[in-house]
Length: 63
Image (cartoon, rainbow, N blue to C red; front, side):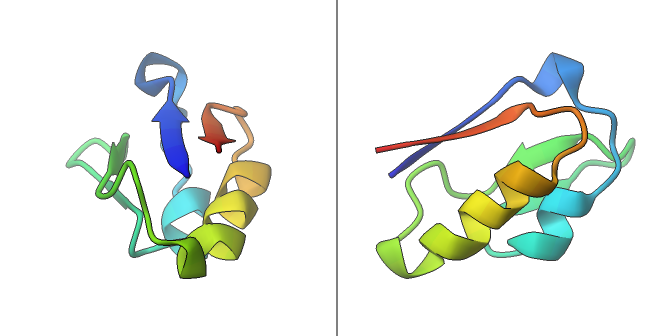
């Protein structure tokens, strides 16, 4: 699994961090930071939930 993010389109809502705190964080301005671009398979559901929860649709989970 690979996590791709369009950082320049992030609206800093933090939904990704709430859904998958082991994969995402936020900088001082609230912009998404990807902690692990290749998270383990046991974090797939959380990571996909984070992508689905993103109001800006800037997170893509690829196989």
